[in-house]
Length: 219
Image (tube, rainbow, N blue to C red; front, side, top):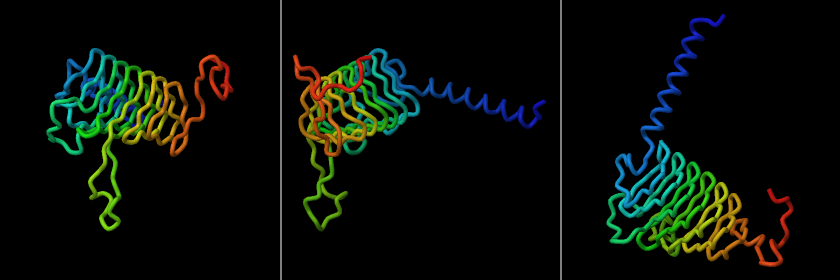
């Protein structure tokens, strides 16, 4: 027979989990319940899970319909809060985009970030249009003016866990980025890239199909 102490501990555990579930529901951000954020657009069915990561520059962020944004995801337009980034949208997610837990998407007015439709990202993916420069060997890298270049992620792409997408990257349609890959430059559609720096390890070549051929049977 359980002791009074164990019974009280079980009840306390159940209460804590119940409160947390209610907090997750109440703290989630949707078009109907935007919380403290003034996004330029939140599409129908889009939800930012609670707790959110760092979120600022929301007047320059557009989120498409039916996006799923996991816990602790950072969405940042601009390098600091309260910057005036001009009239244009800086960070855009298309419809059906999924951002895994702990991912970061960072854009600024000199380098926008655009996701196409149905882009899926694993946890802890990092996408940025701004990176530190290190031109001056006498100045700390963190104090040097950053370089920026627009980033585009093509519709239907899949970014594996821990992938890093650097300024200037342009991914075509249905690109697969392996877990932990570091991508810069252009990647053609229907390609698989892996490594740091990432390189193409497989491509779809029309009548020849996937080259080199897939080693696993089709699902």
